[in-house]
Length: 311
Image (cartoon, rainbow, N blue to C red):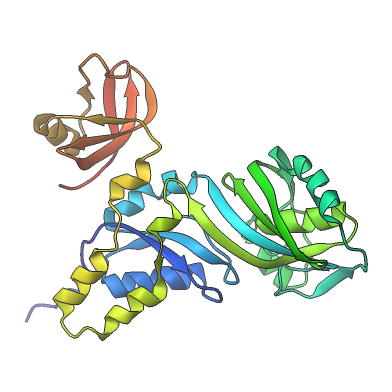
Protein backbone atom coordinates (compact mmCIF):
# COMPACT_ATOMS: atom_id res chain seq x y z
CA UNK A 1 0.00 0.00 0.00
CA UNK A 2 1.44 3.36 -1.04
CA UNK A 3 2.47 5.97 1.51
CA UNK A 4 0.21 8.98 1.67
CA UNK A 5 1.83 12.26 0.72
CA UNK A 6 1.96 14.97 3.33
CA UNK A 7 -0.52 17.78 2.78
CA UNK A 8 1.69 20.72 1.82
CA UNK A 9 -1.11 23.25 1.54
CA UNK A 10 -2.53 25.32 -1.29
CA UNK A 11 -0.37 26.92 -4.00
CA UNK A 12 -1.92 30.30 -3.18
CA UNK A 13 0.17 33.37 -3.99
CA UNK A 14 -0.09 37.05 -3.11
CA UNK A 15 0.52 39.55 -0.32
CA UNK A 16 -1.56 39.84 2.85
CA UNK A 17 -0.98 43.27 4.38
CA UNK A 18 -1.69 42.45 8.00
CA UNK A 19 -2.51 45.02 10.66
CA UNK A 20 -0.61 43.22 13.39
CA UNK A 21 -1.99 43.68 16.90
CA UNK A 22 0.21 44.42 19.91
CA UNK A 23 1.57 41.51 21.99
CA UNK A 24 1.72 39.30 18.91
CA UNK A 25 5.08 38.30 17.42
CA UNK A 26 5.86 38.58 13.72
CA UNK A 27 6.78 34.89 13.40
CA UNK A 28 3.58 33.97 15.24
CA UNK A 29 1.61 36.18 12.84
CA UNK A 30 3.14 34.51 9.77
CA UNK A 31 2.32 31.06 11.16
CA UNK A 32 -1.28 32.10 11.84
CA UNK A 33 -1.75 33.52 8.33
CA UNK A 34 -0.15 30.50 6.70
CA UNK A 35 -2.53 28.24 8.65
CA UNK A 36 -5.61 30.35 7.91
CA UNK A 37 -4.89 30.42 4.16
CA UNK A 38 -3.67 26.79 4.11
CA UNK A 39 -0.69 28.14 2.16
CA UNK A 40 2.30 26.07 1.07
CA UNK A 41 4.76 28.73 2.17
CA UNK A 42 4.79 32.16 3.76
CA UNK A 43 7.21 34.83 4.95
CA UNK A 44 7.19 38.43 6.11
CA UNK A 45 8.97 41.58 4.94
CA UNK A 46 10.40 43.22 8.02
CA UNK A 47 9.96 42.19 11.65
CA UNK A 48 7.72 44.15 13.98
CA UNK A 49 8.44 43.90 17.71
CA UNK A 50 5.70 42.11 19.71
CA UNK A 51 4.87 45.39 21.51
CA UNK A 52 4.47 47.20 18.17
CA UNK A 53 1.35 47.21 16.02
CA UNK A 54 0.62 47.97 12.40
CA UNK A 55 1.68 46.95 8.95
CA UNK A 56 3.30 43.54 8.58
CA UNK A 57 3.38 42.53 4.89
CA UNK A 58 3.15 38.74 4.64
CA UNK A 59 3.99 36.98 1.39
CA UNK A 60 2.30 33.72 0.40
CA UNK A 61 3.53 31.29 -2.24
CA UNK A 62 5.36 32.86 -5.18
CA UNK A 63 5.11 36.26 -3.52
CA UNK A 64 7.94 35.16 -1.19
CA UNK A 65 10.25 35.72 -4.18
CA UNK A 66 9.47 39.45 -3.96
CA UNK A 67 10.18 39.81 -0.22
CA UNK A 68 13.64 41.44 -0.70
CA UNK A 69 12.10 44.29 -2.70
CA UNK A 70 9.57 45.08 0.03
CA UNK A 71 12.29 44.78 2.69
CA UNK A 72 14.13 47.58 0.88
CA UNK A 73 11.04 49.83 0.83
CA UNK A 74 10.66 52.93 3.00
CA UNK A 75 8.78 52.53 6.28
CA UNK A 76 6.62 55.03 8.14
CA UNK A 77 6.05 54.78 11.89
CA UNK A 78 4.09 56.71 14.48
CA UNK A 79 5.67 56.40 17.90
CA UNK A 80 5.40 57.79 21.41
CA UNK A 81 8.48 58.45 23.52
CA UNK A 82 8.13 58.49 27.30
CA UNK A 83 10.70 60.78 28.91
CA UNK A 84 12.48 60.30 32.21
CA UNK A 85 13.58 56.68 31.90
CA UNK A 86 15.98 54.73 29.71
CA UNK A 87 15.31 51.00 29.61
CA UNK A 88 17.40 47.95 28.76
CA UNK A 89 15.22 47.13 25.75
CA UNK A 90 14.59 50.80 24.80
CA UNK A 91 10.85 50.12 25.15
CA UNK A 92 8.33 49.40 27.91
CA UNK A 93 9.42 45.79 28.31
CA UNK A 94 12.88 46.31 29.80
CA UNK A 95 14.24 47.24 33.20
CA UNK A 96 14.99 50.88 33.96
CA UNK A 97 18.71 51.54 33.50
CA UNK A 98 18.79 55.35 33.93
CA UNK A 99 16.32 58.04 35.04
CA UNK A 100 15.94 61.81 35.20
CA UNK A 101 13.48 64.37 36.53
CA UNK A 102 14.23 66.67 33.59
CA UNK A 103 11.63 67.06 30.86
CA UNK A 104 12.20 68.66 27.43
CA UNK A 105 10.11 71.53 26.08
CA UNK A 106 8.50 71.27 22.65
CA UNK A 107 10.92 73.86 21.16
CA UNK A 108 13.86 71.90 22.59
CA UNK A 109 12.62 68.71 20.94
CA UNK A 110 11.98 70.37 17.59
CA UNK A 111 15.42 71.96 17.68
CA UNK A 112 17.10 68.53 17.83
CA UNK A 113 15.16 66.77 15.04
CA UNK A 114 17.43 68.00 12.23
CA UNK A 115 20.27 66.06 13.89
CA UNK A 116 18.34 62.84 13.22
CA UNK A 117 17.41 63.33 9.57
CA UNK A 118 19.36 62.40 6.46
CA UNK A 119 21.98 59.66 6.53
CA UNK A 120 22.94 59.20 10.16
CA UNK A 121 24.92 56.73 12.24
CA UNK A 122 22.86 54.68 14.66
CA UNK A 123 23.74 52.01 17.21
CA UNK A 124 21.08 49.24 17.26
CA UNK A 125 19.53 48.32 20.64
CA UNK A 126 21.17 45.70 22.86
CA UNK A 127 17.96 43.71 22.45
CA UNK A 128 17.95 43.42 18.65
CA UNK A 129 18.39 40.76 15.97
CA UNK A 130 21.83 42.07 15.01
CA UNK A 131 24.39 39.25 14.82
CA UNK A 132 27.53 39.57 16.95
CA UNK A 133 30.09 36.88 16.08
CA UNK A 134 27.29 34.58 14.97
CA UNK A 135 25.01 35.23 17.94
CA UNK A 136 21.88 37.37 18.05
CA UNK A 137 22.36 40.46 20.21
CA UNK A 138 19.11 39.78 22.09
CA UNK A 139 20.28 36.28 23.04
CA UNK A 140 23.50 37.71 24.47
CA UNK A 141 21.58 40.47 26.25
CA UNK A 142 19.22 37.94 27.86
CA UNK A 143 22.25 36.12 29.21
CA UNK A 144 23.36 39.36 30.84
CA UNK A 145 26.25 39.97 28.45
CA UNK A 146 26.84 43.59 27.45
CA UNK A 147 27.94 43.61 23.81
CA UNK A 148 29.60 46.31 21.75
CA UNK A 149 27.31 46.78 18.76
CA UNK A 150 28.96 48.89 16.05
CA UNK A 151 27.16 51.93 14.68
CA UNK A 152 25.79 51.69 11.16
CA UNK A 153 24.42 54.16 8.65
CA UNK A 154 20.65 54.44 8.20
CA UNK A 155 18.48 56.83 6.21
CA UNK A 156 15.92 59.02 7.99
CA UNK A 157 13.92 60.79 5.30
CA UNK A 158 11.55 62.60 7.63
CA UNK A 159 11.18 63.02 11.39
CA UNK A 160 8.29 65.16 12.66
CA UNK A 161 7.04 65.99 16.15
CA UNK A 162 3.27 65.48 16.04
CA UNK A 163 2.64 66.78 19.54
CA UNK A 164 3.26 66.59 23.29
CA UNK A 165 0.10 65.30 25.03
CA UNK A 166 1.76 65.88 28.41
CA UNK A 167 5.16 66.73 29.91
CA UNK A 168 6.18 63.06 30.04
CA UNK A 169 5.43 62.10 26.44
CA UNK A 170 6.00 63.20 22.85
CA UNK A 171 4.49 61.73 19.68
CA UNK A 172 6.49 61.52 16.45
CA UNK A 173 6.21 60.38 12.85
CA UNK A 174 9.28 59.02 11.08
CA UNK A 175 9.84 57.91 7.49
CA UNK A 176 12.98 55.82 7.26
CA UNK A 177 14.95 53.32 5.26
CA UNK A 178 15.88 49.68 5.77
CA UNK A 179 17.58 48.75 9.03
CA UNK A 180 16.45 51.77 11.07
CA UNK A 181 15.60 51.09 14.73
CA UNK A 182 12.94 53.45 16.07
CA UNK A 183 13.84 52.31 19.59
CA UNK A 184 17.35 53.67 19.00
CA UNK A 185 15.86 57.00 17.90
CA UNK A 186 13.94 57.25 21.18
CA UNK A 187 17.00 56.31 23.22
CA UNK A 188 19.31 58.77 21.44
CA UNK A 189 16.80 61.64 21.56
CA UNK A 190 16.39 61.11 25.29
CA UNK A 191 20.12 61.18 25.87
CA UNK A 192 20.57 64.21 23.61
CA UNK A 193 17.85 66.13 25.46
CA UNK A 194 19.32 65.19 28.84
CA UNK A 195 16.19 63.47 30.12
CA UNK A 196 16.42 59.84 28.85
CA UNK A 197 13.57 58.16 27.01
CA UNK A 198 12.11 54.94 25.66
CA UNK A 199 9.36 53.80 23.29
CA UNK A 200 5.94 53.71 24.95
CA UNK A 201 3.99 53.03 21.75
CA UNK A 202 5.04 52.06 18.22
CA UNK A 203 2.87 51.62 15.15
CA UNK A 204 4.01 51.03 11.56
CA UNK A 205 1.59 52.65 9.16
CA UNK A 206 3.31 52.04 5.80
CA UNK A 207 5.88 49.84 4.08
CA UNK A 208 6.49 50.94 0.49
CA UNK A 209 4.92 50.26 -1.91
CA UNK A 210 1.94 49.33 0.31
CA UNK A 211 -0.27 51.90 2.05
CA UNK A 212 -2.33 51.88 5.23
CA UNK A 213 -5.50 51.37 3.15
CA UNK A 214 -4.16 47.89 2.23
CA UNK A 215 -4.07 46.73 5.86
CA UNK A 216 -6.40 44.01 7.12
CA UNK A 217 -6.94 43.53 10.89
CA UNK A 218 -6.18 40.05 12.17
CA UNK A 219 -9.63 39.97 13.81
CA UNK A 220 -11.26 40.34 10.37
CA UNK A 221 -9.46 37.24 9.14
CA UNK A 222 -9.96 35.11 12.23
CA UNK A 223 -13.69 35.92 12.20
CA UNK A 224 -13.90 33.92 8.96
CA UNK A 225 -12.95 30.76 10.88
CA UNK A 226 -16.62 30.51 11.82
CA UNK A 227 -17.54 29.75 8.20
CA UNK A 228 -18.28 26.03 7.87
CA UNK A 229 -17.71 25.70 4.14
CA UNK A 230 -13.95 25.43 3.45
CA UNK A 231 -14.24 26.63 -0.15
CA UNK A 232 -16.25 29.71 0.76
CA UNK A 233 -13.96 30.51 3.68
CA UNK A 234 -10.81 30.30 1.55
CA UNK A 235 -12.40 32.41 -1.20
CA UNK A 236 -13.30 35.03 1.40
CA UNK A 237 -9.73 35.02 2.72
CA UNK A 238 -8.23 35.20 -0.78
CA UNK A 239 -10.25 38.34 -1.48
CA UNK A 240 -7.95 40.21 0.93
CA UNK A 241 -4.77 39.30 -0.98
CA UNK A 242 -2.82 41.89 -2.94
CA UNK A 243 -1.33 40.83 -6.29
CA UNK A 244 2.27 39.64 -6.12
CA UNK A 245 3.32 42.20 -8.73
CA UNK A 246 2.08 45.09 -6.58
CA UNK A 247 5.17 44.59 -4.39
CA UNK A 248 7.31 45.65 -7.36
CA UNK A 249 5.54 48.93 -8.09
CA UNK A 250 8.69 50.94 -7.35
CA UNK A 251 10.76 49.06 -9.96
CA UNK A 252 10.87 49.63 -13.74
CA UNK A 253 8.35 47.49 -15.63
CA UNK A 254 8.20 46.08 -19.17
CA UNK A 255 5.49 44.06 -20.93
CA UNK A 256 6.30 41.19 -23.32
CA UNK A 257 4.45 38.85 -25.68
CA UNK A 258 3.22 35.37 -24.78
CA UNK A 259 6.05 33.84 -26.85
CA UNK A 260 8.67 35.91 -25.04
CA UNK A 261 7.09 35.03 -21.68
CA UNK A 262 7.38 31.33 -22.49
CA UNK A 263 11.09 31.73 -23.26
CA UNK A 264 11.62 33.61 -20.01
CA UNK A 265 9.80 30.95 -17.97
CA UNK A 266 12.21 28.39 -19.44
CA UNK A 267 15.08 30.48 -18.04
CA UNK A 268 16.16 32.00 -21.35
CA UNK A 269 17.07 35.67 -21.95
CA UNK A 270 15.16 37.72 -24.51
CA UNK A 271 15.91 40.85 -26.52
CA UNK A 272 13.60 43.75 -25.67
CA UNK A 273 12.47 45.67 -28.70
CA UNK A 274 10.68 48.96 -29.12
CA UNK A 275 11.42 52.65 -28.81
CA UNK A 276 10.91 52.66 -25.04
CA UNK A 277 12.85 49.47 -24.34
CA UNK A 278 15.61 50.20 -21.77
CA UNK A 279 19.20 49.19 -22.50
CA UNK A 280 20.36 48.65 -18.94
CA UNK A 281 18.45 48.17 -15.66
CA UNK A 282 19.67 46.38 -12.50
CA UNK A 283 16.12 45.39 -11.48
CA UNK A 284 13.05 45.20 -13.70
CA UNK A 285 9.84 43.19 -13.63
CA UNK A 286 8.26 41.63 -16.70
CA UNK A 287 4.58 40.94 -17.35
CA UNK A 288 2.56 39.28 -20.11
CA UNK A 289 -1.16 40.00 -20.40
CA UNK A 290 -0.93 41.80 -17.05
CA UNK A 291 0.47 38.73 -15.24
CA UNK A 292 3.85 38.73 -13.52
CA UNK A 293 6.37 36.62 -15.44
CA UNK A 294 9.78 37.37 -13.95
CA UNK A 295 12.15 39.72 -12.18
CA UNK A 296 15.59 40.19 -13.67
CA UNK A 297 18.17 42.51 -15.13
CA UNK A 298 18.56 44.22 -18.50
CA UNK A 299 21.99 44.48 -20.06
CA UNK A 300 22.60 45.86 -23.57
CA UNK A 301 18.89 45.58 -24.33
CA UNK A 302 18.63 41.94 -23.29
CA UNK A 303 16.50 40.78 -20.36
CA UNK A 304 17.99 38.07 -18.15
CA UNK A 305 15.51 36.41 -15.72
CA UNK A 306 16.56 36.03 -12.11
CA UNK A 307 13.28 34.98 -10.48
CA UNK A 308 10.57 33.34 -12.58
CA UNK A 309 6.88 33.12 -11.67
CA UNK A 310 4.21 30.61 -12.68
CA UNK A 311 1.34 31.17 -15.09
